[in-house]
Image (cartoon, rainbow, N blue to C red; front, side):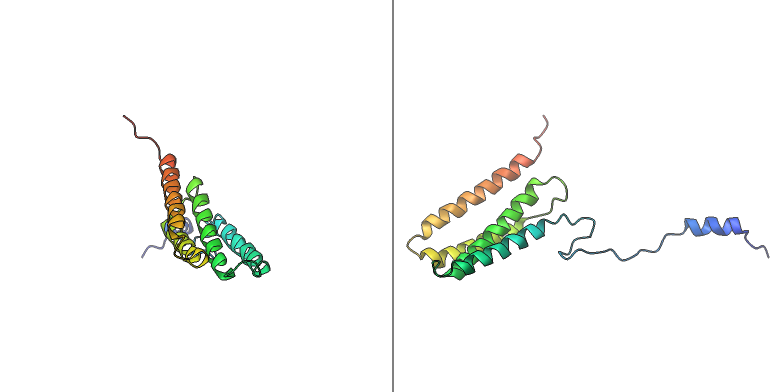
Amino acid sequence: MQTASPIEKGIRVMEEEPEQSETQMCCCGEAAGDCDGTHWVTVGLMVIWVGITLMLRGWLHPWWAYMLCGFGVALLIESLIRMTRPLNRTPVGGKVVGGIVLIIVGSFFIHGIANWWAAALIILGIVFLIRGIRKLRKPAPTV
């Protein structure tokens, strides 16, 4: 029976796969190394907007509808930031749709049904802007 020398044991140990340690996660659900902090911009904008709407709730009626619109705008701003950053680019479709829905619901309660068509035009314009920005970011096809 032949025993392995300490050098051979060391080589075998080095050849074995290292144990997979649990990946550290950021509070936003991304891997800690992939987190770019963009979500904190959104949280900051939302907290600032809550403070502004609460301070102006005497003049803004219904103030909570303005808060919804502000949350929607914050989500759209985060989406624009994520689309324009070449590193750590993530899909933004859900945030865009969520932001537009919040803006639509808030606008409905602010302006009522009579001015709904104007809000729909604004939202349509925002969608066109986002599509244009996304197309500008893609490389041109080579001929």
